[in-house]
Amino acid sequence: MRICSTCPEGTIMEEELICAVCAEGYGAGSREPVVLPHCGHTFCRLCLFNVENTGRLDCPTCRKSHTGTAVGKLPINFALLSLSETRRRTESSVCSVHGSPAELWCQDCQEALCAHCILEGHLTDGHDVKAAKVVVEEKKQGIRNQGNRLYIHLNEGKKKLLEEMRDWLVQLSKTCEDSRNLSNSTQNLDKILEDTEHSCTMKNVLQCEELVESLHLEIMEKPILKTADATSVVRGEAERLQFDSLQWPLKVCALATDGRRSKIRYEYKRLHMYALSEQKEDAHFIIQFSAMQLLIPDENPEIFMDLATTSRHLGRVYISLWGYLRRAQHFLALCTGTLGPSYRGSKFNNVMDKNGPGENIFCRNYMYKHRPCSKGLMDNLEWDGEHERIEQEGFVSAWSGGKSEAEAYFGICTREKQNKKVACPFGKVIRGLEIVREAVRHEPVTDVTITDAGVVIPH
Image 1: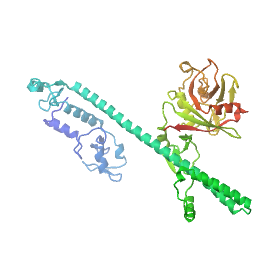
Image 2 (image 1 turned 45 degrees about the vertical axis):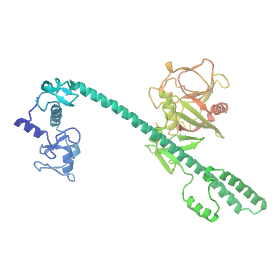
Image 3 (image 1 turned 90 degrees about the vertical axis):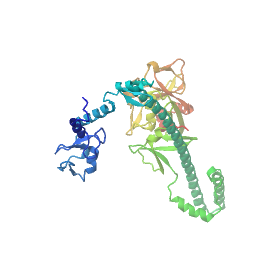
Image 4 (image 1 turned 180 degrees about the vertical axis):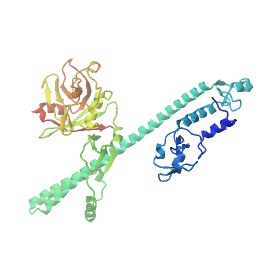
């Protein structure tokens, strides 16, 4: 029932729907009406925040003191809040001239109308009059369409910023890599100069001279040093002391919310982010791991694994994952450590059909708290059925049998077998398959370890 604002009862009702402190109508949010428990008077929460003084609150109406309950926890007067919302909706849908429901809208005059209004000129003047509900929906749809167009522009801006961040990270990582090379050269020079000081024969001095000349040629080939001025020996000695105060080489890492860190390296002309680690590696530059994740492509993320035996490093393997599969996302998580454990430190377990068609090498576990574990970290991973495919060389496939306790179990095909089907391949080796084959040939295969893993950040 609508209460007329011109009658005394209506005036009283309107006063009840207005905060006595700020004279603003109640509404959801900061203006919601809250009750003071000791006296029962109601005010908007924002005003009570303003009058609260070091935990003590005096009622603005009766001055009764209230302690104990914080303003932020005072109960809402839902009856008044409901009446306020109803009043607001009613006032906005009533004709200000005739007091009748304003259910129509004049497109020419851009104003709400009631049935009396259209008889007083709008229709006879040829104005375009529509039902207000229809116009409201049209305008809402227009706002949605404009909002979607703005989202597109905003998202394009975000993509551009991510590209700029990627370029910045590449340059920063290149700088760190240059610093690593300079640090190694500095250590080599230190060793040559130390040997020179201890040289007592012409033969030893000539060897040191040859080494320093070789190092000179190597250093001068570095692009960053080609324009360096090295004419002042005194300046070189002074700057050496200055630079020794900085821990070299420069390092950049990604920091996860749980405190773990991920190395970021520029290697083989690409940006690599290693699996998260508990080791607190000191870094000169730190970026949030969540920001780095935004740079990993959804469609075909590329991971890497370093393989080694107890006696030598075999090499690095790159695998392109099919990102539309949850199983690929699960494998990515185990290569980056985003869900906790990772494949770093895991060993290969066995080879199937060695030296023959259908040859595969298998890894069953990831490392969790320094112990092997194969239980899945994600639910509803694909298996068999529509995900079954004819095996190809380089395929990385699931071999869990669809069992949740073995979802970490994967195999890499090194020799395909004609018409052989695998239950769920989720990626393919795109570089380093010869490294995998070398691991297959190694005896015993259980000596082959995934010494490190991570993801490539494309640019």
